[in-house]
Amino acid sequence: MQDYREFIDEVFVDAASIEKRVRELGEQISRDYAGQDLLVVCLLRGGLIFTADLTRWITISHEMDCMSLSSYGKGNYASSGNVRVNLDLMTNIEGRNVLLVEDIVDSGRTLAHVLMMLKTRDPKSVKVCVLLDKKMRREVPANADYVGFDVPDKYVFGYGIDIDEHYRHLPFIATADLSKYKPAG
Ligand code: IMP
Ligand code: MG
Image (cartoon, rainbow, N blue to C red; front, side):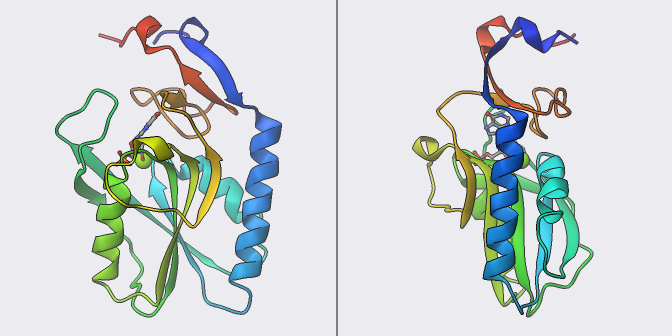
């Protein structure tokens, strides 16, 4: 696998800034759900690292569950909105306050699909917390209630977000110069 230093454009958010913002989001969520039920749902795999850090700043009692979706068709670093459920929730969300935690909203298709699907299960509420929001790329209405950072129309990676399943472990969020990226194989 190619070293990311060969195609990194710039470090967009460094580790200290991520930690500060994640802490703020956790504190905000703790205030907003004070005295209420809360089920945090991590959207795998991109939301994994963000969720792990975020929940440690949520100071009120809450449950956690995970879900894995993948979009198919189209491809090449953009989602199609044809969403398949790879792993469903283990929790019955009827009557629950659900907080979906997602890595990035781009066209909004994935989020719109999962919101529609979860609403058929009669939760009390569903809110969305995204680490990164590419607002100018929206094709369908899908708004997050909590946003870590707005990002420009560039491919990003690190802190849970991958390029071809790699680089999720990086402690910062970087933008990529895809013209310099060579896919393996
Ligand atoms: P949407 O359905 O177009 O909103 O796409 C959302 C999904 O596409 C995210 O959950 C990511 O998995 C993926 N995605 C969108 N932009 C990027 C990016 O810049 N880097 C990595 N993955 C991305
Ligand atoms: Mg994702």
